[in-house]
Image (cartoon, rainbow, N blue to C red):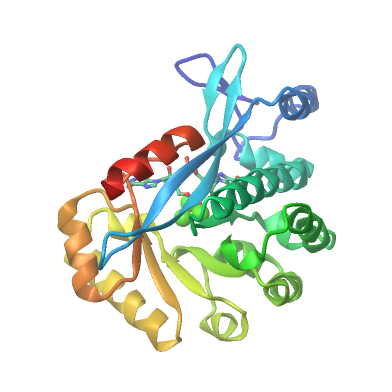
Length: 277
Ligand code: C2E
Ligand code: CA
Ligand code: CA
Ligand code: CA
């Protein structure tokens, strides 16, 4: 069954089995949303914590439904995954991000954007080729792009995930382990995967100024990442205090509401001007 939120928006609850009728109509709505251009690319800035310089941004999808209004990704990504629609969405995101990246590079702006991959994407043998075609169309080197993968997505089928990630890394994409610390990550896999970056989950970062344990977890993760030669990024930076703590710990980059919320591309570009001014 679909759950109703205050606004009357029907959202997908993976805990409850949806009736096939509802699933069918949601799937056709998603397909129509793609045709009618109802998905929007949002960007959240990513900063160098030592200098405050903007290094790029994370691409996050939003669905602006004509009747139901604004729908966040948590309300349709899980469903998109179970139905296989995610492949369309992931390539749509990559296309949008690649186009923007090429535009900005032509203007001399070297920003690095990250795109989220889901569990299902990692099992998709055709994804690397689809990404390759997009890069070629925009004459873009993949070094400008980073792919974020959660630990749990990798551990779902480690051998196949490794095969996909090896191909993507060989193509030149930077790879980041998202939500680090929340899944059952095996450190052995971390060593074997062609990863460039660890992204500490926001659940540890948000309260690290109040919670000593959270602060210790963040500090150890920064050290672990650095010892493995990885860049470490903190998400969920909601205050200046947390920024300072992270900087003291040597964390490389940060992302969070304190610097900027996810925003539409136009606003992201405006924000960029202001931040540099
Ligand atoms: P995520 O990849 O962990 O993305 C970070 C989430 O944390 C985003 O939520 C972002 O808005 C939120 N966030 C950022 N800074 C802060 C902060 O300072 N405080 C707090 N409380 N939250 C912060 P969002 O945009 O709702 O996305 C939720 C999840 O949906 C993402 O988690 C990601 O797993 C998934 N998602 C979003 N866009 C896509 C996409 O294009 N493809 C795939 N596969 N998944 C996506
Ligand atoms: Ca992410
Ligand atoms: Ca995350
Ligand atoms: Ca998350």
